[in-house]
Length: 188
Image 1 (cartoon, rainbow, N blue to C red):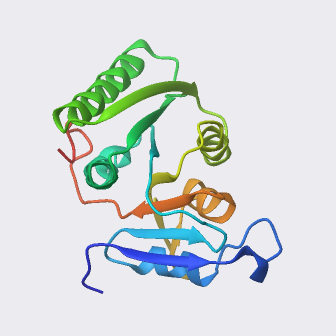
Image 2: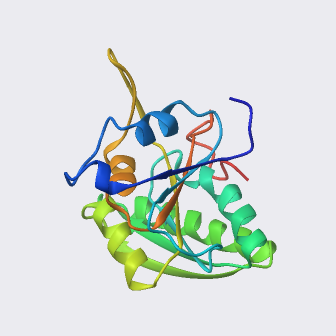
């Protein structure tokens, strides 16, 4: 599928259970070669005023930043960085993470975007992201698909599944890029 992004709507009424893993939405997101916006059927407004950008210390977490910048520029959005502090209580780990968050902040500033950073400790990242997005009345969550490969094929990681399945807020899912995880300025 050659495209710049793909929008996909769905209705939770079709699937009454809390988690709908294995639905068409998940399949489209897992197989698409471009970013996918999934929106629940009840969404009743166009545009994105507040975008949530969850960042953790994983190798691919910051690959979604350029796509977030593109969306924020189109809609003149404020970007809320939700920074999940590393679980490891090692000073070097924490210091590297703060540097990475500062790089994201600088990148957003270079693109003339208003941003705000919110640090949090890791709990359930999916639920924490959704709750945070609701608390600031966000219109969009930008996340990586965190794909996992198994005998049965490609599936999404726990965080991606949780957010896509439970979020009442539109979700922009971005595929991870191939990269060197030791390169601190990955993606931009």
